Image (tube, rainbow, N blue to C red; front, side):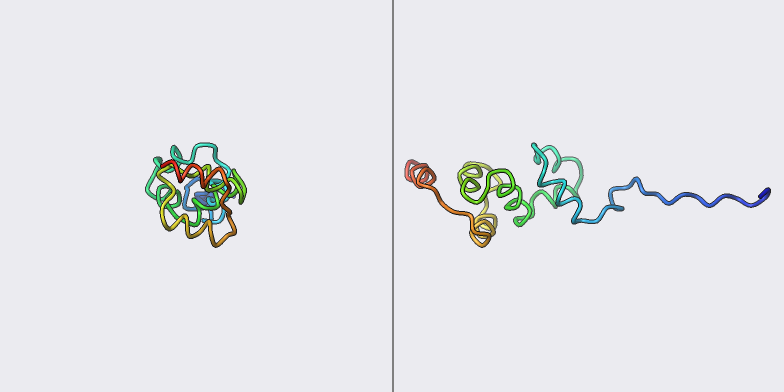
Amino acid sequence: MAGVPAAAPPNLTGVDSLPTELWVEIFVHLAAPQAFSMTCRAFHSLATDPSLVAQYWLFHHGRIGAFTAALGTKTLTPAVVTRLLTTGAGFTRNLFSLIGRA
């Protein structure tokens, strides 16, 4: 109709338009979450959340390998250790030998 302005499409391109749960799923599947965490404050906040970091290690290395893979990284904080333990992540003999050598 002439003279009636068309409604502007909603802005769906912003990061804020996606739910946090979706960003969590994206983060867990990343190969290099450190690069993701440096893009903006919101992503940094996600990338440093202990529950999310624990989910990342569990997704990529399983309950048996999560601790071994995370050992020696900046992401293995006491809060992440607690989260890994509460989700059933286990210690391997290899992990005990690595800790014993440290």
